[in-house]
Image (cartoon, rainbow, N blue to C red):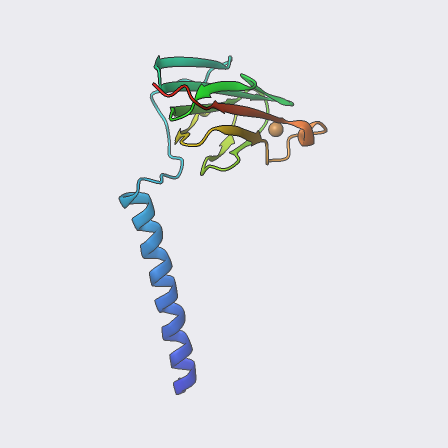
Length: 150
Ligand SMILES: [Cu+2]
């Protein structure tokens, strides 16, 4: 290996090492989890919003051709929301704009993510996995309302 080649090789390996270390740090140190297998929640056939406390919510999202259930959920600012997602038919996507939540709705499985809404506003949710002729209209939103923090 000539010197320039060796230099490029070492630089590339160093970059990859830094990227990998930062990803591990984000996942383990900052708890920005990627979706893992959820075994304690059975697939459900109905969407619902469950409120555990003034700022604690659990939303069960059912993705269906071509809408999400429940639609247009409202929560107060500062809320922590546990999101469970499944599909009633085909594979759908689920991404909440302005957050790190980016899940797949796979029939027979439940995907999970936790999100804290620190800023009020309208958070659009889109299906980003092709799911048929109505795919482009498949969206809903979470409305985070200001001034109701408990
Ligand atoms: Cu879809």
